Image (cartoon, rainbow, N blue to C red; front, side, top):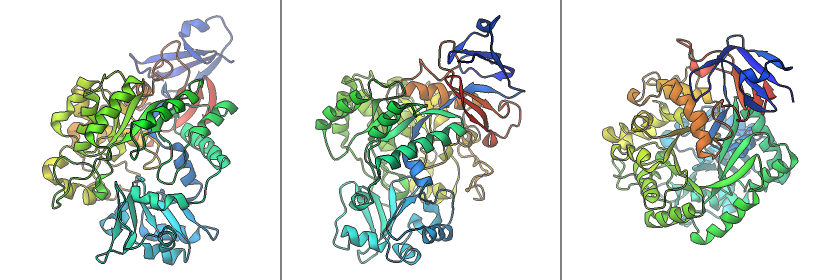
Length: 529
């Protein structure tokens, strides 16, 4: 393997002062002096910055790639564009894909009649960007037998008109009423999607990730076999930690299954599965986020997917078995329930809570006290239409001041990791880093025309560029149990590296527009812009 010497530009190591050179030999980082007198290739940075590869701590790559390959609405932004894409979708059977934004519709709720007109007679199932709701056609509802007499399932809701007739939106577990009817994806479909996701993430400088749901969810099948096949074939180049799905409809009896699934991946060098994902609540936009106090103007507080007392028992059992727990928590009550569950257990795992839309101030210091990592999706921490119209009015003034308190958690000594939640939002780390630092919409985002988009959201919660980069590298490596391999440019670690197109620490650098020029895995080039 060729030895490399990177020189001619700043090197951000992530664990100390910046340097001006970095050496790689046999796929590992070595002191620059180790190449003295030996044959090696020089990579001229030409003023560009070299840094560790990004590790996305919360992403759904197979789902993201499948949407890109199907009826992909994620790059569109309004009702008319969505319907045009549905109408143009080839074939005569199911229309699947997804990625629509709730802000494109009054109250965040599209209608089945629009799909019926765009795809006459065809069953349509399109999850929205956060995958907590799906837009479905009348044909899909009919195939599933969903009508005015169908009860809401546990932890789910069917949107209805005043007469009780379903309007075409299914929330949370109500999606499972239709999902089993979708055309079954083949192993080949998933294998291709994983490789497409890997290619795409490499192009953004993301060299590894934590897959936030390895299991069947919302119409997606289990991806464990997909990763194991890619590992065996040698096609999986990224370093991946899998978060095994905790089935909220089952109890402790599933622990045996989780142990078997972890064991199936135990011999891997690229994929391991020592984490369990528990989705404790939903999202604020459809009022399924679990809040401490009722939503403003409502008489309900959202829902906890797992009873808090049982959650404590489950987390303790998982901890004793050596699992880390990756919690989904949007509402302040869900965040507190997750922290309480960790506090009740042995606290030996690297537990982390993702999203953190609303965190009660009294819980901020508990992240550091309990050694729970805040797994942040920074891109969402702005004034944008969906949040300003579908969330803030129902939080009320006081609770709206508790949104995405990344700075407060960091100041209290809490550890941060960072991820994208792609396909919920773009996997480009620099879009999220812009928001983490500025708390405003990136200038080129679809939401940038919203009147308040350039007004910082709670600017006291901003991070420094150093903090944001550390979260997206060393912090994320830690929660994926990979800090001995990646996350900093330390001698002995894997040479998973990114050469940026500029130095982002230079004054007035537009962070949202930084690009990955060169990406290396184990010192081998995997992407060149």
